[in-house]
Every structure is written in C-alpha cells, then in structure tokens.
Image (cartoon, helix red, strand yellow):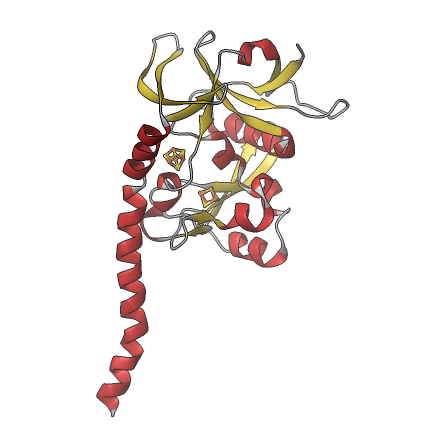
Length: 240
Ligand code: SF4
Ligand code: SF4
C-alpha cells in the first residue's frame, strides 16, 4: 500500500496558523480525495493524493500509510440537505482561491467584507461568503439547492473550508451506507464516533430530515420573491 498526504489537525485558538494551513491545502485542492474518520486514530483525516513531484508543505501536511483508510469511514454530504449553505454557513474564501475565479465571480467575492490576517506564510485576505440573510452563502442557489461554484466550475473551485467541513452524520465504507449514532471528543482530543450501517431508505429519511431546514427556508424565500415581484404592480395600480 502507498502513502497519502493528510492535513495536520488545526491548532486550537491559533486562527492565523489555521488559515495558513487552509491556504496551503487550497493549493492542492485538485488532488483532494475526501475526509475520512479513522476509528483507529480517533481522528478525522483530510486526505490528498497529489501526483509525484508536487510540492507539499510538510509543516501543514503529514504522510500516512494508505492502509489506515481501510477501516475508515468516508464522510458524505448527500444531495438535498444543504444545511451548511443555507443558514449560518460561515463560508469564506481565501485570496488564492478568489484569484482563480472568472472575472464576474471574483468581483462578487471582492465586494464582500474581508479581513487580512498575518499568517506564518505572509498576509492572507479572507473574504466572507455568508453575507446573505441568515448567513446564507452568496453562492447557494436556494431554489435548486445547489452550490453555484461547484455546478458552474467544478468541485475544486469550492472554498477549501467547504470541502473539508462535514457534519459527520453521513458516511460510507466499502460501498455501504452509515449514519452516526453518537460522537464525542475525549479529553486528550481524540474523536470517538459510532456509526451504524443503514439501508437506502433510512439514509434517505435522514437526508429528508436534515433537508427540512433548507425546504423551510426556500418556502419563505419564495414568498419574499413573490412579494417583491408583486410590489411594483401594486404601486402601479395605486398610481392609476
Ligand atoms: S449538514 Fe452534513 S449533509 Fe448537510 S450540507 Fe452540511 S455536511 Fe452536507
Ligand atoms: S461555496 Fe458552495 S458549498 Fe460552500 S457554503 Fe457556499 S454554496 Fe455551500
């Protein structure tokens, strides 16, 4: 078995370092494989598989045996949930990622509030994407429940923070479906999660349940859109 590159764990309370690590990870986005939970290590592993010869920053990445993934659960984000995008998304984009966007999308992001962080690798600009009502991401298509970046440009154009963050409710292993039953963090920082294998129907029921937040939001959003469309008409009638 070969080796894989895994992002080292974030440092608690050290935002500058963590943003630096995310920027380094963003450089390798196109080789991102997925996030796995390793019960053996008690750790979530963000796995990258860069082609040989690719420069990898060893300060933020470590190399692990691929065999560790054998009993690991792969984190999944099934279509139809959208909870992470629709409210309190907390999504943001790092300057390096913004530069890769086509002009009009880059302009949109650059108009969002931003902050500059002095990281170990120099200054990094971080742009907020959660500036729509209730913290919705500017790239979330409420009607269709889709990430516009992914749909239009591909997965590797999504912000690295979106690629790496999972609720950990849904997982797969060897083609089988799992749902998290419980999870906790031990005092020494290990993550202990228990998964149970489920059938397609149970999995789908959970997607429906989780997706209720988005569907409720979409109802309110549609009403608002209707009101906005009707408002000028009403004004016109009054004037007449
Ligand atoms: S809550 Fe989980 S399944 Fe839902 S959008 Fe977030 S990561 Fe995906
Ligand atoms: S960039 Fe895409 S995946 Fe990330 S929060 Fe926005 S809509 Fe969701």
